[in-house]
Image (cartoon, rainbow, N blue to C red; front, top):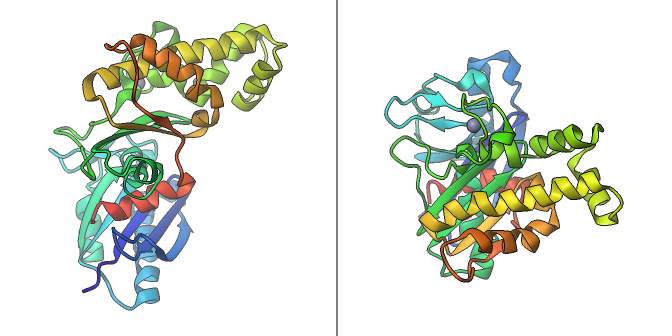
Length: 303
Ligand SMILES: [Zn+2]
């Protein structure tokens, strides 16, 4: 019996497809991508997904009954419409129904943070280091902040499709207004652009997060120190809310901000300070799959 699993990562710049051998042996059998060209509108994006699926079919000579798709934003489970997507032409559209009709197969969807968490739990760092982990929380701290909860190898999407979305919890008023309509969200404090904006506000200079971190390490720039210490403080505070509710077996941190090494030392100490326990046993890990997590996680949606 063919146990291949097919996944698509529908991203802002590319639509990527991958076929994995099986869930237990996730060797990559085929992989290809096309540009999303989202500016050409919703129908074009749907067509680009179809073109990737057609390439996958041509490569292996068959079409499966179902496939998984990682999407920016979430399918509202009640309405069947996309929401919260930064690829805004998807919002309000019945993407799952349209794809199922055009592709002639069952489509399972989850947002990119959920797919990241699923991939790292199923074939990434959590699987490698803690194969018996039941609950994995995957964090994305990049241009935005998202998260995904995986329990026993399954994504917890939630009643409203917002399971794991800690990025829009309230964190601190200093973050200012958020695109979501609220203010002081975790994302407005801890996303890469938010950290860069904070540095600019205190120093009067525009620098990338990487430059700010290098200045912090050099120990020569008080504003870099202030920015990084604030990040560490709020990282611990924001994540403590998740740990107190979920108490995951493993936390994996993805996205550009996750490349800041002090997250895994000072950040963990900060987290320990805020949780409802006298110590922190939770491993906080760097991911293993990089940009591939989305497409691999999508494939595991049908495992
Ligand atoms: Zn928000």
